[in-house]
Length: 129
Image 1 (cartoon, rainbow, N blue to C red):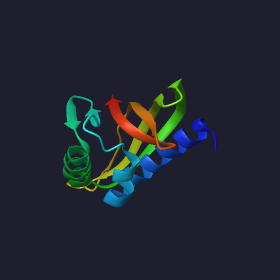
Image 2: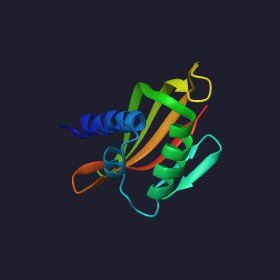
Image 3: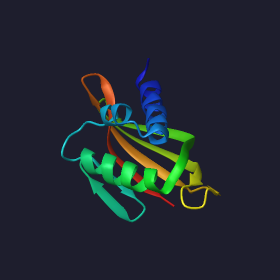
Image 4: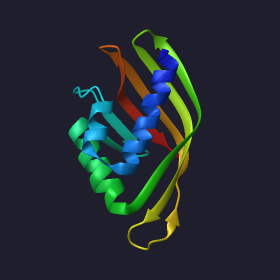
């Protein structure tokens, strides 16, 4: 599988992990280094523990009984053989936990990915609306 295909597969695995919120699916997608972070519009989560617990579990899981992250028009920009920037439009299909109503968020997502031991891993994600 070529690098572009591997990177797009990583995005797909991330989408699945956001849906399941399964720690065993989510954590291995990241480089798990000190510089991992995720920015969700106006809030920054630093380190894999904060990204998983504060963003995914205490944020997404507490707010939604169901969430599907849909990526559209994935554009991969290889910086070099070990670093790439991915940009895509996203939308979510959610069910709000408090009201059981359908809900959605739209915006751009920018993951930065790094090749570690011949595997592409997430380093940074930035969501914007």
